[in-house]
Image (cartoon, rainbow over all chains, first blue to last red; front, side):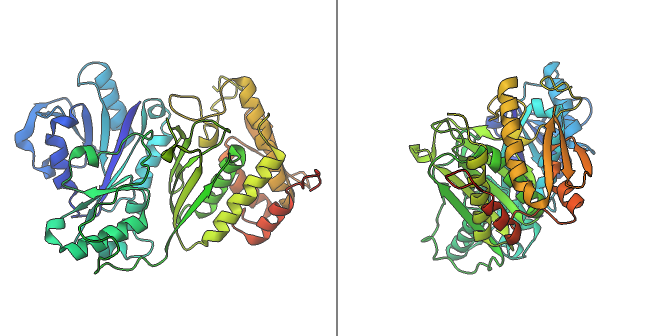
Amino acid sequence: MIPVTVLTGQLGAGKTTLLQRLLTSPQMAGTAVLVNEFGEIGLDHELLTPLEGEVTLLRSGCICCTVRDDIAGAIRDLIDRAARGQIPPLTRVMIETTGLADPFPVLSTLSADPVLRSHVAPGGVITVVDAINGPDALAEAGGMARRQVAAADVIALAKRDLSVPAQTQGTLDQLHRLNPVAQLTFADAPLSRLLPQGPRDWPEAPETPAVAAPGSGHGHADLDGIRTLTITRPGAINWTAFGLWLTALLDSHGDRIHRVKGVLEVDPGGPPVLINAVGWLVHPPQHLTRWPEGVPHTRLVFIFEDLEPERIRRSFEAFDRLGHAVAPLPG
Amino acid sequence: MCALCGILGGDDHWSDAVPRAGVYTRRDGPQARRAEAARRAKVLNAVLASRGLKFRDWQGQYILQTLTGQTQVLSMISHVWAEGGRMTGRPMDPLDPAWLARIEDAVPDEGGAA
């Protein structure tokens, strides 16, 4: 399965600068990058081989593809070309969204495509946040910047050189509060830290870089309305009831629940299962190879606006108890 | 066509995913799939009873029925909540305190009585 990574962020946040680094790095060889307009990235001197259609091979081994209308169709075409040997085998696909885009429809399009479902897997979301203008965008309740940050697996803070350490720290604190399950890093960090790892690598505790003491920052806007809830539980939860419950919850409140991520114990003594939902979209649950911290323990994090955390917990518990009572696993 | 149930299309809900590498599913074989479908029907019926609805999984199609016999056939399990809300005239919001209380009451006690 080819991982598909989404690169998102507000207009002017620094996505193009990051894309330039990615596209020219030999580490990205075999990666197909889908962009809105290749000319806007300013890498004409890196062109190696223009191929048929909108596809270009770069010196780095990266394949650049300009999307005209249909993202799913563009990826199907790339997979087909790689299978016929017209382009190098694909190791990753990366999609640049426009600055105003919600990552949810992109992810949803890919998961709904019956052909792509058997070729690609979610490869994480990288969200670029501008250290100068980002905090103001994040202050807008219900705004797109919040959805982009909440959807992230990696948050890359750009333009930190234009911000004083206390302000940068304030923004880092704010981002960690908004999405405690994302890996937080800087846009000029090594690529190995910027590219989301596979779902088998649930971070034990996402690392939070600091330029000052965490919590000491200032100058960041308030995050009105944003709430997080973490449910932790020893012992297996009832998978059947959980699946029905989360579907019902997102059906009613997917517009306000930006993210659900966690590891579940669903079969007593079995391997952990990773759950990852962005908006209404729940990615296929993944087996992890090991438990975070080495101990079986269900841990679910919810990021949402304008909902009562304790009611979510109560509802989760009610469905789980009912599931254990009426539909337990045999044995 | 769904190879397991013989129905064209076939649901691929995340909680009951088509088996593929790395994905957690309980569809590992016809017997496991039927067992999970039976468990799902039990949980759904326990939840939906307080709204006067019954659920049945019929060879990969889902049937919702009101007490007065109004029936809807659904092809996707995720449609149960929206369609159930439409059939009963009340949204099926799992955070609705009144509905939650009914669900909590539906849990049988240790002796087996609800």
